[in-house]
Length: 442
Image (cartoon, rainbow, N blue to C red; front, side, top):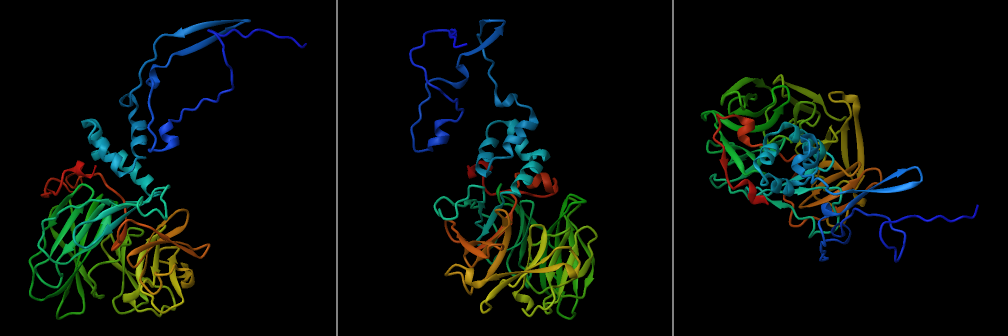
């Protein structure tokens, strides 16, 4: 037809060019080094709607746009947004108002949603053994090489306990259990803590007996009861067996004797692997037996170790990797490879499979030192502590690379942050102490 027709536009047209709208802020695109100025608030922009009827175009002006506040959002959407934040922004949000404080501190829906998301981008608990822990968040944008960017969050609580050795017993759902002092003497203390909130309380221990030779502790969580338990293995001087005592928090401050076990536990702590509702540990003399404490039934049973092990049990480490029980010869100074055994089906001896990591692929400076797997991350890579450094191992590619962290890594554990107060979890019968205000971390 080769015809023209006029397109009516409200106002004058001086220069026309094609434009694709963007809702990105310049701050997001350019970064924090640019000075960005706002000419007008986004919500005050004039909005126009066009009604097209037959061949004519009528203009209808919207005189007022209602303001949408974040507080007007449905609760589910608000929790969805807040659960995606990292630790420091969540603490800032807790100071906004009482509603947000209660939501982030006590709402189980937020806690469950945050915990589910944190499994994809885990957190590392760095413990120096002097009561000054720190947290390192492993987000999707984690930079392997930027040491100054990968700065842990310093918690620096000042626990008021007597001077002496401090070691971590276990971690469950953001709560930690640690012991102050040597467990072969009377003057030692057990604490439960939420390091993120700076809360802790001292566990009341049974009266010390002269016949006690050594005590070993464990820490676990019962999903059926929704309660936390501390285990106490008591080895006496005149017997080869150990007595097992259990304290379930929230059900009274009482230690219950649940029987004897023929396997003495000689080490200061359990391996921190909680798998399939059980707390496992290696036999102290034999490398072909793994013992497992069932958290629900409070019974101890044995599991088959991988076949053909030649490494002594004190050089073997039990860990959880990708919801599997794994065994590694973490103290390996002479071998040409590092072995990681995976129990693909819990309790079935035939399900053990071996992953071999060649020492030749390990970066310089990390050879002939301890290798302790921590967790699975970044689509199948294994985060490993190598001495006082972290490295990421790709089993498929048989490769290592150093993970730079600001400062030294003394001891590292996988950690799920909890914003729940110990008072909420443990009940009103416990005397909870605050070392610093919850907002100080901000």
